[in-house]
Amino acid sequence: MKSRRSVQRRFRVSGTGKILRRSSFNRHLKRKKTKSQMRRLGVEKQVTGRVKKKIARILKV
Image 1 (cartoon, rainbow, N blue to C red):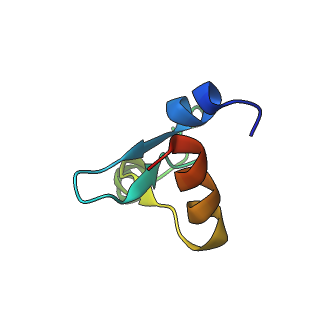
Image 2 (cartoon, rainbow, N blue to C red; image 1 turned 60 degrees about the horizontal axis):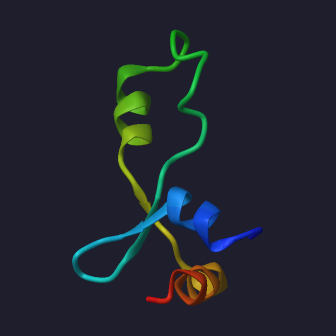
């Protein structure tokens, strides 16, 4: 990531310490997506694996 600020805007830490991110495919062209797909895309996803360690280090968690 370029800077810590950009990472802070894209990710957030939950109360239990999980790193969460927003879903992609949720900005436009929503008319063709189903209601259930839109609900699924609205939920924040949990970051896992090696990326989680990198993001945690940048966020100083």
